[in-house]
Amino acid sequence: MEKQFASVAMSEKHKNWERITQRENELYSRLDDIRSPFARDYTRILHSLAYRRLKHKTQVFYNAAGNDHICTRMEHVLHVESVSNTIARQLGLNEELTKAIAMAHDLGHAPFGHQGEKIIRKLTKQYLGKNFWHEQNGVYFVDNIELLEDNQKIMRNLNLTYGVRDGIISHCGEMDQNSLCPRDEIFDLKEFDEPGKYQASTWEGCVVKLSDKIAYLGRDIEDATRLGYLSDEAQKLLLEMAKSRNDNAVNTTVIMHNMIIYFFQNSSPEKGLCLSDEMSQQLNEIKRFNYENIYSNKRLKPFELYSELVINQLFETLVSYYDLYGQDVIAKLSENAFDQKSFVKGFVQWLVQYVDKTLVTQNRSVNIVQNCDNRKIYGSLNTREQYLTAVIDFISGMTDMYAINAFEELLRC
Image 1 (cartoon, one colour):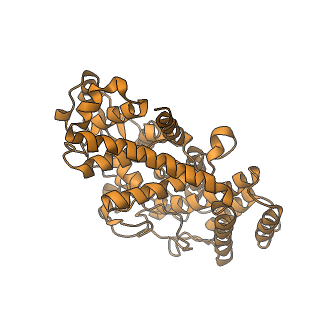
Image 2: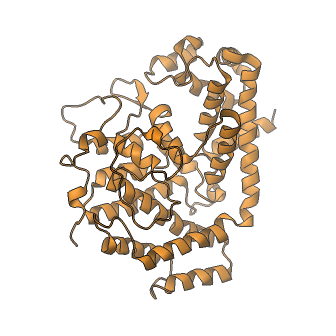
Image 3: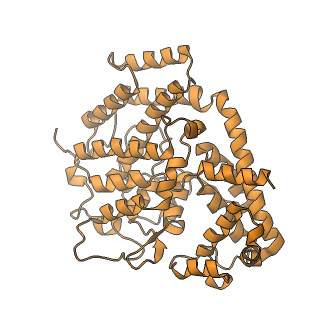
């Protein structure tokens, strides 16, 4: 099949190449480095701690910790990479950019899946007067929170290209439009103030957005079936929906395959990335099916209540220290470290990387910050808002198990 998007792929010949490959700061270089800018992004993401933590974050079903066959956030990311890479290769798009966006698109996702995101959104609105959504938080994380050691053993910000950062913030898969085309404008990503406000600036970013939707809908059905969330009646309805457009669609694997093939057959640079009207309707039907039978399933209610309890208690505990010590919170907690719970110690050791160095006086913390050359986004902690932002950032980066273990420490006080 002709690679009909090759002429619009992101390459050195593309009119926006310089801007799409732009970083805030120049990366260190090696004379024998053979990687493209996007290949460097891919490996930087792969080696980041934020990526590693995805393996212990919920996708939909929390009991992944006790069931090796239920999808985690990391597996979801790999599914999106697989689907998007297949599409990009067939269409003639830049596979390296596509892979990097897919790998990075859920970095910084909250613990406990979208339920955790909802809880943190409530806290952010209540205490900071801001919105919180995971696509925006992903860019915030790769820009400000995630650090990576350079070739001189100095911890620096991840410093990804504009194209990958743009793909992260624009990947919202909840939008139901059939045809996707990249936007023409290359603007500051702070212009995104709500999910799905703009399309990605590259065809590769649009491919990841579509692939995210295909991947999560298909795998969520598989996991729900394995865990017994779907009644016989619901499974029968799902099969009837699938077979109404393809007699061979016996499971989600076949449905996902068919959708990918339909993208190849119906997409062009002139029309955009699109399914046939019939297949687009089926995709939206499956999405409605998932919301009615999976995401709104009453069996998830205990998990939702437990998630809210855990996150709120961790938030209140960490905030209480600023109410007690104010700007001296780091020094006071460090002086009394032997009395602190391990997650509080972890918070302090994490926090010192992002505050003015003048606040850091304890030897162990001094050793940490001496090797950090990154943005000090919380300044001198001279306002409660700065500290609350730090607490929310810390919690939103947690894995499920870290949050649960921290909560259990509170129960043992």
